[in-house]
Amino acid sequence: HTNFVTTHTMKLETTIFNEESDNDFLKKQLNRFWEIETLGVETNKIYETFKSDIKFDGRRYITSLPFKEHHKPLPDNFNLARHCLNSLNKKLDKNIELSQEYHNIFLDYLKHGIIEKVTTTDTPGRTHYLPHRAVIRNDKDTTKVRIVFNGSAKVNEGTSLNECLFSGPSLLSMIFDILLR
Image 1 (spheres, one colour):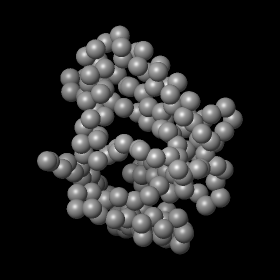
Image 2 (cartoon, rainbow, N blue to C red):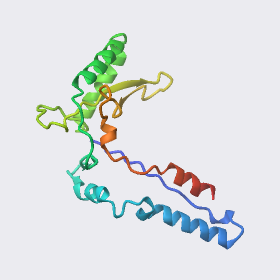
Image 3 (cartoon, rainbow, N blue to C red):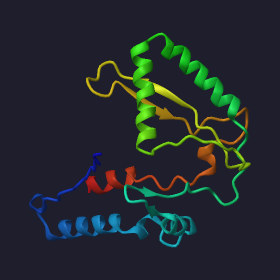
């Protein structure tokens, strides 16, 4: 069993700055970026709950989903998920190799504990089926098929799973702004 870890690093070349003040400004901005207070979650109850719920089972970290405190109830979306699955199966039935590859991804997810088989649905408002679909990239040599789960799927005008969860701040604009300065 192999674990894969990706590390992203950022190196700051200070020689590109002509003035010391530019260098100090960028250092301060980068420090501010990496401080959790910049995200506004330090005093956030959701963040604190998230931190306290994290458990390590010897292989990976596990935590609960960050549900909003007073979210609308999740509707029964079994029929929607079943419809999505039937549509997907029709598409996969046209290509046995693709169907087997998709099936193997789920077997791998089960093997590694990423997903588990649900045997009971006795939690009203917390039982929700997550529709999925195949994204097929024939131009790729390695991962031609991947699974995309749709947390935005809704039953009629009901609530989606994504609407019931805190998403956290988007960091993309912060990264872009800092790198341009």
